[in-house]
Length: 284
Length: 330
Image (cartoon, rainbow over the protein chains, first blue to last red):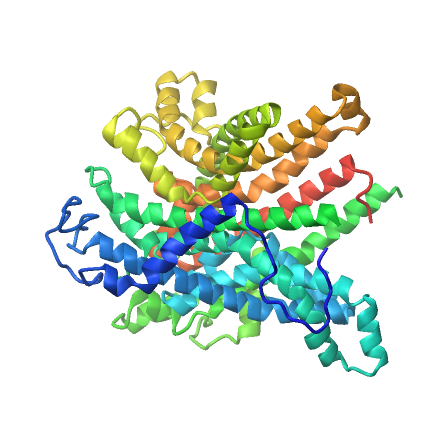
């Protein structure tokens, strides 16, 4: 298992990625690159009509234009920003709720632990997409609202792992030693237990982030994410769908491809990280 | 009492707070809506009578128009659910939500079953090949399983539509059956009903319509099976074949329950996305359509329905688990 060091904080656990993991990292890096350098990579405003309607890919519009004449290439590049911001924001929210609750629940035990665990288990058992849809339908469109809707779904994932880890760490000798020298509960939680759950948080993050990407894409496919005309891959996929029958293939092919690249990339990283930790567990 | 009986009773009792928690969660979610839900539904310029009528329909005000306090709203909501009253739709015929759900459920069950079948055939075949051949083949199947987890259903569906319906023109692009060919209602599953009534034209039409959606759903779920199949075949290959497998007890049964649990939720959420992509008239399309019309009572009722289904399925799976594996007891 993981080495327990009470004081030293290591934000990213030392992980050696496999070839698959590096391939995944490359795919994610591509999306991040598009998001960061969007203004330099795009000739047009993604929210404005800049060309003829439904123009197939050509020199001027590399990925074609949609019904209202927006440039698909610009929308895809800026769409990377939307999805990455939502993913990042929702992950931070899930962590901010799930991690402290997991720490407190695992450390305190008793009735509080039972109640919290039961609520989290109930949410965990619920199909995540349906929960996110209900939440997003209630909150309405917007980046923050979408992030909150997705975050709620993943709070139990963080909670369960952190709680489990806390349960085993609090029995460790150095925690007992800290208690013996008079450290109070807050100190023990923050400086003795929390540093040792960080690596598990990273693992949970890498394993769930692909799912977060797909949930965001699904919400925006349902029209429940950011409002138009914000560029968003899932929304563009939905908007292009009616034109598929008439053979306008470029409207759906490229946004969907980008969703897949990002999700597969994160999955490969997660797979690689999980494999690394499993191999370490077997060895020690 | 045997410990199995104790387990079953304890588990049955646990399902009550779980369902209560989930329906409360849904109630809470639907009430945190910022702003006035009624204005969101009908718009700012709606006549006051219409607004009052909707407030009554949503259970926000009583008959004389006085606001009902939140705890009482919550209590009424639970009491209605307990009586099997999921509320009435806010639009069109204002029909009971439960009736509408029941109309759309068979289509979803049919799609889920077909998708399940495709995923088992695909997954077990690939997984067995991977586990049996080992080496590069095993890694390839491993990557396949990983990729299927990350497939975005609507996109896969659209690519299949583009290939088979738009370019090759061999399969229909969406829907469940050609209009007018619906078989007489027995189970609500078109494929089964058309066989039972001997309507072969209906059967062929229904089959042609279900191919692309079930392929989409099956492809995405197949990763669950290819993963399990690969690892178990690899395990068997390492052992002294049959004797060792038998000596381990009845792994086949345990495996089946295990797989069911792992595949059920992905199939359900997968079905929702598949349905909206292929205009398949099931629960997913229904939910999607009512979200667009802001039919909140129906959305809430459908989500609650899902919550109850999930709790019951989990209950059944847990009891099956305990029945098969004597180690799981309280």
